Image 1 (cartoon, helix red, strand yellow):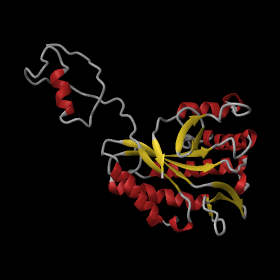
Image 2 (cartoon, rainbow, N blue to C red; image 1 turned 180 degrees about the vertical axis):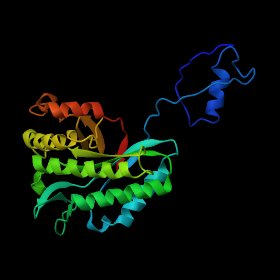
Image 3 (cartoon, one colour; image 1 turned 45 degrees about the vertical axis):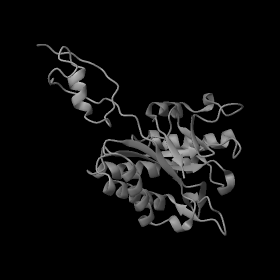
Length: 269
């Protein structure tokens, strides 16, 4: 008896998947004549659709809330699954020499939270996910938009956002229960109507400068270091196409980030 390598489209969620593969795809003992022996290696499992979230209100800013959100996302994925969740925090802001955001809900007054607080909330989210799903993998993207309302879409803010992601990934690296399961990423909702291409590019390039100085701060995207989310749909772009918004205007460092891209499907809530 010899051996043969076969490649099949994997459907690991199907009943008795591994046994069916070995029994029907291994010649000559196919079609359930008698059991076959071999090894099945799953080389790729597509990400599952996940629910992402706008972080809009001050009353949502507790570790307990983020832990519950993480648990809910963990329960939504099967043990073998993986996906990307985006937490969109709002408007880039620099306040009292601290980098952070204004939350999306600006009424009655804007709520500022720093990158330090955001990182703590992200850790709570990952803790909740891990408590409710012990094996699934997650890319957690922490995002801002490019609206000038917070007056913080700057190169320095992009650098600060990447440093936050770098530190969060270092924390993941140092946690044996998280290592290999979780990754933190940066994200930006870059929309042409909200700011100029040049200003937005400054933020992206600042992020890229700090991210590429470390191996731990990739940017959430399917093909490039920026993500545009319009009307709740995530659209993979480099920077929006047309006019001055073109991929050729991105710095070489930002172009290199394309090799660290992700495929993801997520809906905002």
